[in-house]
Image (cartoon, rainbow, N blue to C red; front, side, top):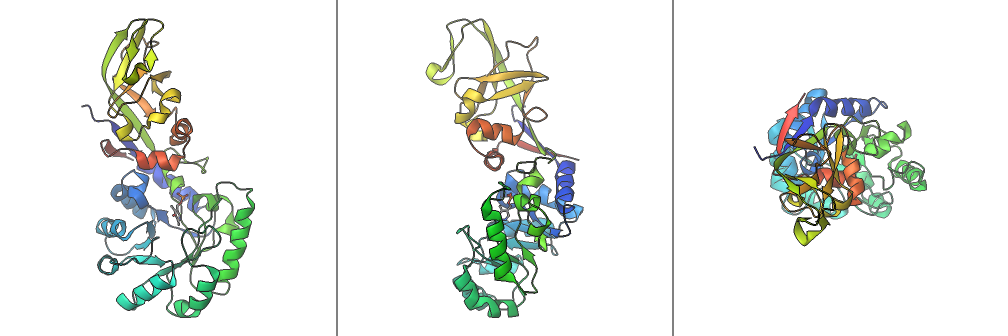
Length: 344
Ligand SMILES: *Cc1c(COP(=O)(O)O)cnc(C)c1O
């Protein structure tokens, strides 16, 4: 089989959720937007629901509607983009909870779906989503009278614990929500790690569930083995791949593996990337192609059948380092061509 296997360890996923939950007394939700960061929202969400998660968060109503089919009635599914034009039918049918971002969205929501649950998103300084202080002042009493399911905001710098923005946003959030009865939420993974002062009533971990930084102690969740299609000897002076970007200086043995930049192994990683055969690190040679890449297996005493890109030796954050990126982007780029296999 030439299809690569992306294994997703559901026990590790749930252990990460439990560990983040147990850092405080707040209820832990689960952020499963972007197909659960590329790992497959249906299976991931089912596992988290079985582990006890009752609030799920997605980015858009369409994701929420799919998730509802998987989870069935009961768990709350909140939509960060709020209530957009054209969303009303989906929000009603799938019983979604839009996180209202503006007065316009609030008007749209109460007009289209009077009495339907909603939450409120406040901007505390990130200037991305949510109502600013003046808007919130105008709407606050009317919105609170209808009992929002959640009042939330988002931290811009939570992955840098010493950043002054964290305490600033915490103070602004406390001011904007003082005295309200609705449950409050400020922390994603980074905010959860900042300590209980940031937890309020509900936390919203995403990346930490999937084994990525800033949750240093996370258990790895994704592992990826790439099948070797072909192995050949390359003589000194011969080149490998597009642009002749790598030329052998010594007699070499080169494996061609079945995954490339169309599968989320970005071309920019090439010069720093490596894969593992057992305990041997083997570097990537030359340019990464759309469907394949070349690896130096000269040091091995056998031709491997598969090689490890993600696993015991290197994490999504290792790959992020090669690409000048973050674990989030590596995970959400993992291609649709991989067979996602779930283990417990
Ligand atoms: C993506 C997102 C989260 C989850 O963030 P992580 O850093 O992955 O834990 C939480 N809240 C909001 C508003 C988000 O957009």
